[in-house]
Image 1 (tube, rainbow, N blue to C red):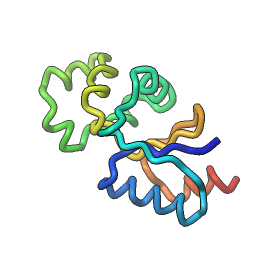
Image 2 (cartoon, one colour):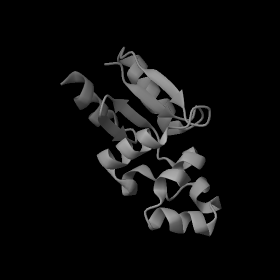
Image 3 (tube, one colour):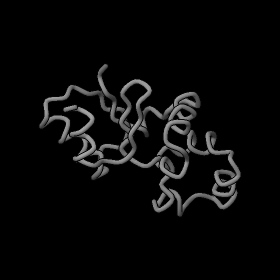
Length: 116
């Protein structure tokens, strides 16, 4: 199955992940989260796989600019509508290969995943 990299084009971590995949000749699809936000079903699957502590980037500018009510909504478990409306809150990149989800880029973990 062809992996998909979800992120935004100007994100340094996304650039590194895509470069690593290209350098290692791993065919992949890039999905721009701003142009193609994930569906509620996709967000639910990602949250089940990695949890909100990993998926939500609480150190981002998007988080800091988020209305307090939305931040409280995330903390109270009303996360899917907030992420759907604000996809840049998602920590990047999200690497999806079927149901296998990885968040963030680490060359060693990518290497282990694709060369094992």
